[in-house]
Image (cartoon, rainbow, N blue to C red; front, side, top):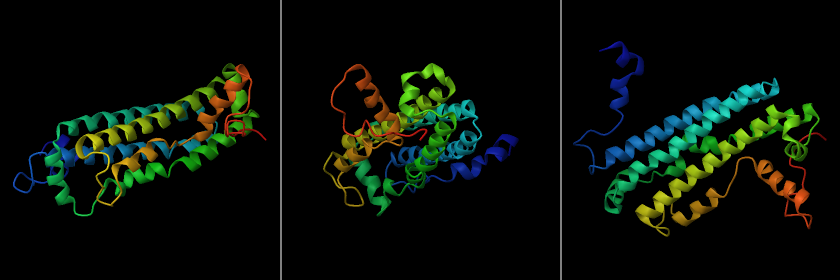
Length: 233
């Protein structure tokens, strides 16, 4: 065994998929590999995001921004690799589905951990804004006043949007293979995935755009947009 194989533990890694005689169909290997790789990307993303709150608390904003930029790349990879399964026929998927038992992507540990990650990130951003004595809306009115802080918020939006794109790619794949009304293994139709696509990690970073809109087009407030989305108080 080479040093490369020992370091990456390739023997163990490549034994984690079913062997040729165990697969219920040819496409089961692609199905397993894609989902296992997704879990690895999410593990890496979570490890990176865990570093953000301490960095923000220490006002190391550039380093925190770089982490969000890396995680944004990971979100893109997660969405792009879904294309591997676009060649999977509905018949092949339903064949693999029988081997899943009651298992479902809704049980993904990485995915559920990502859904739970925003609160400490939002709290650290709010604290950073307060230390600077600037509200989020004022930051967007004059990005040049705090370019490092503004750049951080834009990197957070990139990550947020990247995760939404990943969820949309997953929804599109599900529709392509099983249709919109076919129930999942947990009994919920694929149409319910649309609700998740509309969810965001950092609502304040989206609402501030609507609030800024009223600086240029006066009129009645957009629902929720005039609420203070975070910052100094």
